[in-house]
Length: 108
Image (spheres, rainbow, N blue to C red):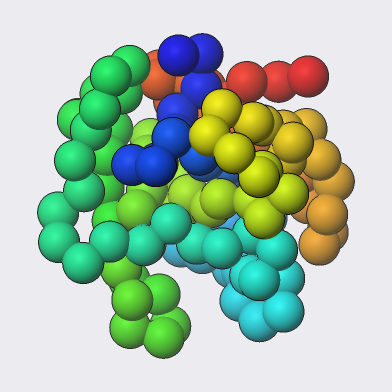
């Protein structure tokens, strides 16, 4: 897999406006880019490194998954597993990129 996905196979993204592992993303925009949250410790799958996986607390008390220090999000325009319609998209004042297993952005 060239990019990271959630447990259902949907691409996950980082947001350039986030500073470190703290999400700056709330409100209506989070309906388009839902934060990837977890109830317990997140688990890595194929192509991901467990050493890069982490979590951060959101203001609403939920636990958001991070990778290589980036809070992760999914994208509502990805209708089926494997799509990456949010890669290299400018929205809500910043760029969105899918992440590769090494923690780097997928780019254009």
